Image 1: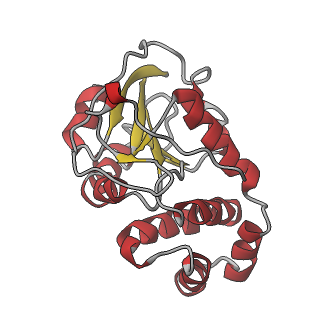
Image 2: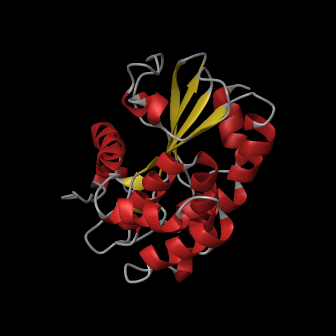
Length: 226
């Protein structure tokens, strides 16, 4: 797929996140912000909620949502996944207070794109394997590269999940996940996302705010009002 990469405009220089560019890159700034997008848009008509039924989701509610745009190769996504995501799951998702939706948006380092395709192919085969592989990418992020991502993904899926690892990786390599990845990329591009991670929060079924960067748990809890 012909991918378009992003540069952050000068006016957004203070926003946090890994910044997409032709060579990849990241920021150590973890400060977040919200944009000027008006609140109140129903999730059903908001770009972040496009094709929501087809997205990996943890949780049962579609009224209170954290919709994440992340890149497996983004260092600040890893920081969020290691420090904040576990509390979101234990304190918001597991008690039924919110749901977490993952949308792959590979704009940082080159290996993030094939990894995102493998994630989508894995999700098509088994949701539990998807979440396990997603966690593995962030936990072992420094070990992945464009040269080993397929082999390393195959090895993990074969040893740690019940999916047919060879079939999943072959599906990703042969383009069977292209449409699913394209849906997430199109949603992110419509929203003008130029950095990861970025989170679109919905409460009572309508858009509440956008959070950018590796924010702490309290930011999400407060923004959602839960």
